Length: 331
Image (cartoon, rainbow, N blue to C red):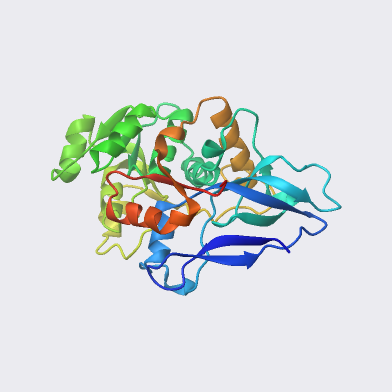
């Protein structure tokens, strides 16, 4: 039995490292030695600090789902994967992992593991963009320029959005969005909606992707959507959006509200606007391989896995300077 280490949250706000036995791979499994995992700033911090809409989880928790590593052993019935293969998987923050062979995906030649580790975040953004069904020339605004907001803007642009409008209150995040290809970058400051409209030079857009997770931002998303526009709820709102007048804000204007939680996916076969996670992983990796999806600019910190607690604290205390925090398990 192989000994390994992993992150555990024993109680609210506490990050520790624990040992565990990873075990040998079963007949249809692979054993992976981790290279990097990526902290999900929105979801993981929300669950770590027990924010609204996370109470059901309880503690202890063993977090993580952005994972890349190399296979070190394969089960007797695995024929399409080999030791040494670089793969991504939906696995937690740990030094090693066992996974079903049909639930991992090989990383194409030329894609750095520090890029590949963003595949799940890209897939989360991708399923929201697919559900928006963006047409060539439609204007798309993205509220929030964290990881999923930045990637959603890039993917909307690849889908034909024109212009793509990145909106955030942090100037540095807007500079990253600009470098990643956003057509317009707007910091509304204290000006709110009117400042956004003035900067855009138009009152509304065809599609709004809400990527902040702030309950109050849903009002802005509804207000920025034009007649018969679409509002896609990409980020998980941590609280209740109060006093929505569904007649004036939604019904009278024909607004379509689309829930885009990553869990609402088919398990086995992709169809229009609803692709499996593995299929979206494949697209994300191919976009990275061809240079069409930029993720390297999102990484602000690479820390030894033993300093995981520091990584969470950086994201909690200084969102203006930290975005993609990778944990290095290779040592």
